[in-house]
Length: 247
Ligand code: NAP
Image (cartoon, rainbow, N blue to C red; front, side):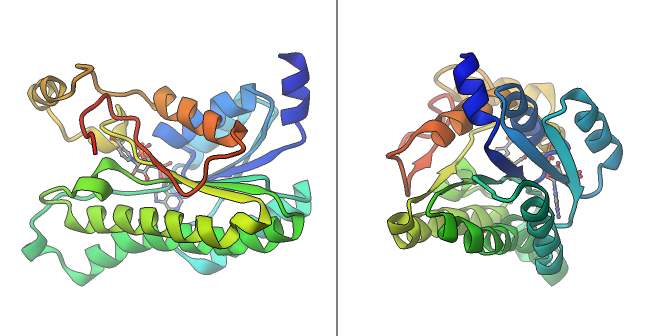
């Protein structure tokens, strides 16, 4: 155990959108496992500062990852301070419910840029260094909605299906450089993202889930940790969802 923690201490992980929910849980637990975390945030500075105080292995950096220049600053900071990036977790994301026919260009752009362009920018900027190292691991947080589509969340579904497409293509392209790329496609996870749901909505959803429960951010951390430590899985979409979606 101690030996593994020492080995992890030399590994640097960037997690985008780590001020809340799934990203925060991954940052807290991976830091406890001994990894050096660069926890990215955008609007939630107070939460990010609180997170940093919890563990000396957590560093924080503000960047709006829907913008190329800010992704460049985040990656530059990580490289200058820690010399390499071993793992990139593209987790930042937003969702917005509404009819497809009502979706305006601004909302469409915000969802696609935050959820999909961010993964494109961050992966491209980080790969420059991973390819030189001939080592790396990219984990894209997509969603079951990317796999099966969600009514009234069409833009979100497109963004997540796009991420999964990127995972598959990129895994083939950078595999020869010993870089693994995988997606985690969570089912319903208890975070602020699902705060619009009523207790009655959640009760109904639980009845549709074979394991009869909504997931917790820690469930996604466990999948991420497995993917980080694994050495032979690439191009896969792993979906911790309680059996809600089985394909
Ligand atoms: P959350 O609690 O709402 O947290 C979202 C995080 O994304 C926040 O830390 C937020 O940071 C960050 N973020 C948003 N826009 C950003 C930007 N432009 N730049 C940098 N960071 C940004 O959501 P969550 O449930 O943890 O979701 C995390 C990921 O899991 C998302 O990609 C989501 O689509 C996916 N997912 C969630 C569920 C679920 O049921 N919860 C299911 C499937 C997939 P700031 O507040 O600092 O801006």
